[in-house]
Image (cartoon, rainbow, N blue to C red; front, side, top):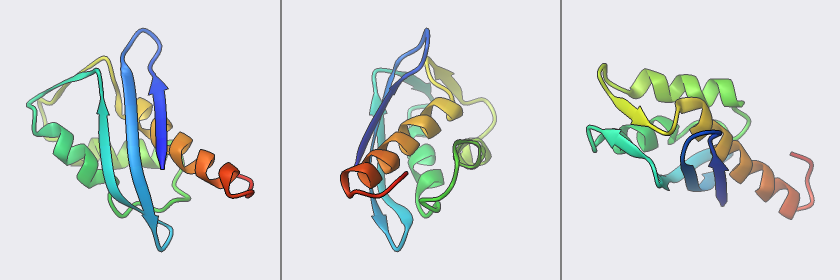
Length: 101
């Protein structure tokens, strides 16, 4: 599954993922944003792994925030914007499969 979101006044966020037993798997967040330190991206991916496909944007953003260590700097993105891209991927997949999101 693939989802994208351009944060207003910010950067493009791209999320690719699979669903396994209705949970997020093989999550890869990418885009034209910057993070410090660089390994924060791995923490974001890890925070999303295993989350329920039914999780709403607030739940996903909270999971990301909980996984990030203090001092992580996000330039042009936010946990909420990442969560929107994730929901777009899941919802588009549901639409493609003929199911309501």
